[in-house]
Length: 456
Image (cartoon, rainbow, N blue to C red; front, side, top):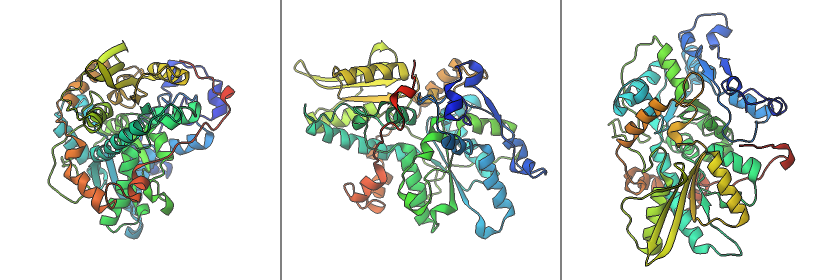
């Protein structure tokens, strides 16, 4: 996808250049379209740089391109402006959920602590008219916990005739889209069925939170702030709990960079504010993260859980060993000279290609692989860690890594809110509701293999 307005036919004829990778689109505000000066017109004029789609399937369909193009500042401000102008009965509640890998970007960019950055971001969004600002860490808790359970089940059921391993993570939409659209069978059966944090957050906001607030899901406009553009594509495919009622879990995805542009161009008076919780608790909770150097740390959490559950081994610090490069690392559990568990982390599409080739040849020694489309992980998402010419801002990224590392780690199992939600929202940890709300299924490629022309 050379820009988010391209059709499949147009994209397949283009060559990849820096200019095309960073094609820009001017986003006019609703006020400008009506020939008037609106309160937010300066913010909505932000120029957005559109990176290539990380899913590596060359392009998206024309219909998807149109839908993705609507997920921008213009769409966001249109809802804000309508809330100010239309009858209150037609107002929509605006809820914004921020990914934990986005907060270090704001902290590094504005030279703030991560707590102060979250308070400034929250205050800015609320000054525009946003009603609630959430942290998506709780959604990642659910995703990790369900992935842990699924890995243990797969490990016990694995056999040569019907291999259930390796299990491949499903949290990165660029990777999942590539697996579905390009690879298909035999790769998709290895994808973990646990939904991504974004998909689960959509269910939490549009189902659990909506019911707590006595709101119809379509009365909530839910925005995700994320490190990468592929989250926009993911929002189009969400099959969240509320879909049967005609409401997608995420209505709009804005990258951290898009929000930062708004903040830099804003002349709106901002008062800092604490992040909200889904439970109506006004007390600010300490920001926390999962045990990953740059992402949600699926490997570390699943490795520890599997070691204990399958072999009664307690693992403290997880030791990574770099293999082909720093973005392909291995973790093993050994006892009496025998390898009990062999996990890997594969970041970036060059490493993913190697994983896929070995998997297809049946020469893949791993039980589990944490797969991410971005080299360096989620902190290096193209929606935030970029210079003006579209390259990785190495100094900013290094600063972000230091900030992220300083955020306290909390195990998903330690979250009392998550345990309460399993009971209150999902009727227990093993109920049919858990499968419906927290798991998904995957589709195969939607077009012939000879039309893909995938190159690395």
